[in-house]
Each structure stands twice: as C-alpha cells, then as structure tokens.
Amino acid sequence: MTGLRTGERTAEIVIRRLSAFRRISPQAAANLEDAVRGRVIVASAGQEVVCEGDPADRIRIVLSGWLARYKALEDGRRQIVAFILPGETCDPYVYLTRQMDHSIASLTPTSFAEIERERFEALVASDRSLAEAFRCEMLSNVAIQREWTLNLGRRDAFERVAHLLCELIERLRRIGLWDGNSCALPVTQLDLADATGLSVVHVNRTLQELRSSGLIVLRDRLLTVHDLEALKEAALFSPDYLNYLPLA
Image (cartoon, rainbow, N blue to C red; front, side, top):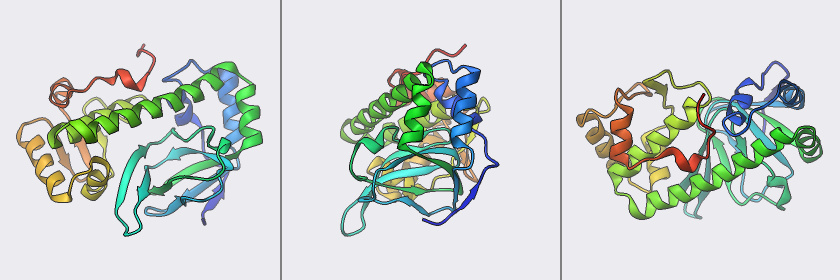
C-alpha cells in the first residue's frame, strides 16, 4: 500500500488502550513510544491496509481513525468481522501465521504503526505488564468475536444494532473518546449492515426504532445516548466479555 511515513505521532492512545488490561509503567510506555516512532503509515478513507493472502510478517497498531476487518465472497459480498478503533492492535502475534486470512480496510483517514516481528518481540520481552496487556487484548478480541457470533445467531435486529453500539461505546470510553453521552460514529449504514448481517434497509429501520424509543440520537455521524443503562438493558448488554480492568 502507499502512505506517508512520519515520526510525529504518539503512542499515548495505545497506552490508554493497553491500560484497560494491565497497569503500564512509564518505562514500558516509553519503550512502546520508541517502537512506534518512525514506523507510522497514513492511509486515506476506503484504503486497503492489508489483503487476504498477504504475508503476515508484522503487526499494525492503530494511532488514529477507524478500520474494518472483513471477509469477502468471490461475488463481492462482504462480512465485517470487527471494527478496529484507535489504540487497538490489528492482531498482536499475527506474525505466527503464514499469511493473512482476512482483509483490513480503513473506514476513515487512519494512521497506524507497522512493527516487524523482531522489534515487537523485543518490546514485549522488555516488560511483563506490556506483554500481558497485548495478550489480554488478543483474548478480548477473541471474546468479542464470540459475542458477535451470538449477535448474528440469536439476537434480533434491534438487539444486534443496540448491542454493537453499546460495545463501541465501552471501547471508546476506555481510550477517552466518549465524553459522557456522545462519541463520533464514523461508519455508514452499509458498514453497520455488513457487521450485523442485516440489509441496509433493515439497519435504517432499526436505527429509526432506536431513535423513536428515545435510546439514541444519531446525527452527522455523532452518536448521543442520554441514558446508557437503558440502551444496555434494551441490548441485553454486559461489558464483562471485554475483560477490562475495573475503572478507577
């Protein structure tokens, strides 16, 4: 892929994300900042970051923007299997496999650091809490996949969309991108449809139902929820599967 490389980025949001799983020491944070420095790529919205079949020889850590992990059929039909948010890793330890078995595309302008295997292994070897945080992130991602499978198999459309919104809010809250009742939601209804296994028409109808129920306000890609507990109750949502440390 093409992109601009720069050393002017910061790993602060990555530390926030990893701190949801383990307490990260100042020295570990400095080591991570050093590992990221000079390895940043900028991608435009809609750009393929990695394609199925590419070598799995490095990890990618998102510094800004939203991406989608997806699988596609030969006729172009797409299933989004994960949204990847700022601070999150596109598969820590993916380099243990031979090649990518899925694709990742940017949904917004995005910046991410590419770190080769040797440098990443040296990074996690330098600090136990950092190594555990990356492992916990991987386990949390696996748990999210199980929850998304439950979404597709057992929840109805209203519950699916509401549950996904609750999950995104919880993940954004841990990196400081939820201001108490609002957050950016830079995804289209097509993206939501591809993530929930619904048609765009069905997603539109479900969002209208959530609005009319007073559970959400969605305007200009800004999501506002005045009663988060009510939305969680409607979605049958519990954040336990995210495996976060308790908030201080």
